[in-house]
Image (tube, helix red, strand yellow):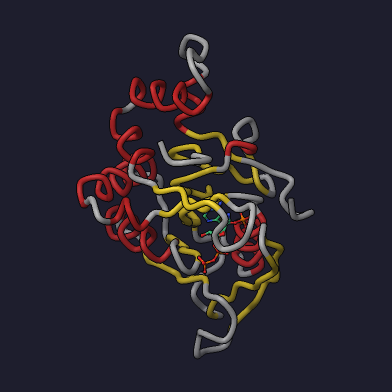
Length: 217
Ligand SMILES: O=P(O)(O)OC[C@H]1O[C@H](OP(=O)(O)OP(=O)(O)O)[C@H](O)[C@@H]1O
Ligand SMILES: Nc1ncnc2[nH]cnc12
């Protein structure tokens, strides 16, 4: 885990599990049953994510959301769940993390009536930028944002597909706070199970819909 990721995420799925009878088979199946009891849309979301072993390198169980995108009803369920959470919370901006935060972030922004701010990988934005470096499960990277994208004190949520070490979200939080944003929460579809009992990143809540699966059923 990156040193900045002193954090974590509690998933809707995990919260539901805590109100359910003990697991009958294995943790993942139990999580799925609990999620379905909490909100049937979560089961469909979990089932639509493909797990690709050893991508992009040995040992990584890659959670692939492109299979979810092929099911428009499930894609809509995911956006609706975030819309239901953030609508009416006075959110001014949705900041999406390249690349997969660009798939979910704009849809959520339009749904709640907020502006969308792309947080991009280095040398992609044409204007003046501020940057933050971070550590990944499989390397290091950097996020950039245009100067002027945020007006100080604006209320922002940060959107990505997945939280693993939390390093990327931590960098995004730092970047936005340096620009004067009030970061309300981070929102991800998927959280890796090792994060399931934790709930904060850099002091900010992380809202996760489903736990990642370690293999395909
Ligand atoms: O919690 P962390 O350990 O920081 O990992 C999570 C990040 O990793 C993935 O992106 P990736 O870095 O693979 O970039 P990409 O979307 O450009 O492929 C994912 O979409 C998150 O942004
Ligand atoms: N296991 C994983 N699946 C998909 N994206 C990731 N980013 C970091 N870890 C990941």
